[in-house]
Image (tube, rainbow, N blue to C red; front, side, top):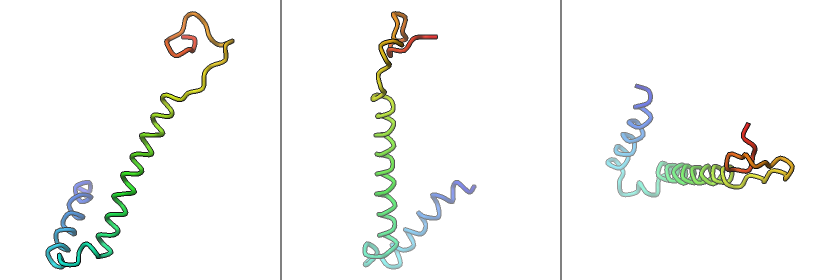
Length: 79
């Protein structure tokens, strides 16, 4: 039930404010805060994807002494 309120109450609040004061809603602090939150959320998701890609693809190469002919495909010895 609590998880539904995370979506339902903000949606209700936006509809209520739009109906009551739709002429100046875009200039209100509510719209400003919502836009700021949305941009921060998208930037956070983008940073997360960048970090995940960096961790997956930009690993340091192992020293030559740790390489063997029986590797699992990424240069490390399968043990």
